Image (cartoon, rainbow, N blue to C red; front, side):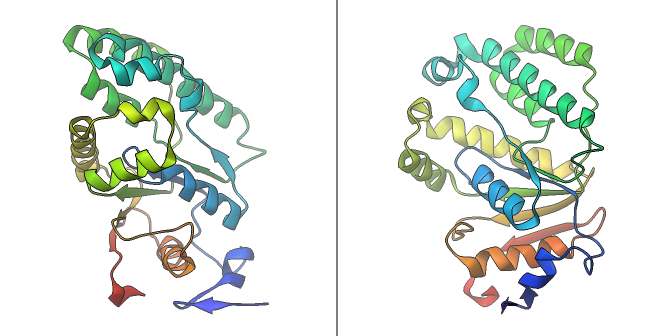
Length: 234
């Protein structure tokens, strides 16, 4: 059965043959609480892609970082660096078997967080470790950058109730959001789709999700699109 909404056909999504420009490697990015992982999982299910997800729950320093950032920033960041590096290496080794993926992180985000949280001496040490790893991460075909106001991010963090995250402050989220804005202002390695998520629910609103799919399927190499969900789009 074929169901059509917003001029996108579910048949087109399930059958890859008619689609000429479907991204084979998609990354979803954005600050904490914006909905990266939920969207990445839904896209993977739609396209029958493998997921590569952050594993914050495995970082033994993360809870202590949120409680005392100056003291715990370096071990927290180094753990994430090694973890993401390992995930990238495993992905490259399996390329011939799993060529299509959705991830909820860019490797570059590691340096973004490091610059935000580490002091000058710590960042110098971090850079030496980063350069020694020679990661050479694959470049996504499409990056979906999710944005939302800080008060909405805090609300979502409180609702989802992850204990380690409950100590995150508005000040930290503001700095993080600005760091993402600055980073993506100059980002040009992949097609980029920027989305204002203030009034978006990709998990429970199929009209929102299908409109997003329409933009994904028409994304072109090197393109930059901005999608602001308003009543006029739905």
